[in-house]
Image (cartoon, rainbow, N blue to C red; front, side, top):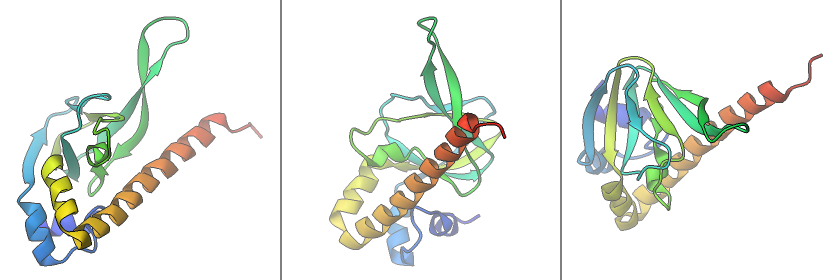
Length: 157
């Protein structure tokens, strides 16, 4: 898929004009990852936002163990083609809130978060449109997490 098309179809950049997308494209780098590769780790400095072109990525959270100092990972959501992940790179304190682990071979677009934040501050229209998109992404992730939580806590019956 062509870069402009992939960006325009994403929740984060929907609503941007071709000229505005041209400015975003300058911040993009294509990436490929093998299965079981960790793209980023929870708690790490968030320097890039990702748009998934191909494959699936598990978004996981460290869950502390009650009986020991160890922790386990719980899958909060699974990103698939067209999804944005790593959005924490756009929100202070710019720290990843989840880990991203490839479930299969992945092709992604990595966006330089500092450059994107600068662009959003310099151009009010782009900033507004991307902010609306960011809310869509976060809302979608929250809805998925709530469904997961409700499914685990639901009373049998």
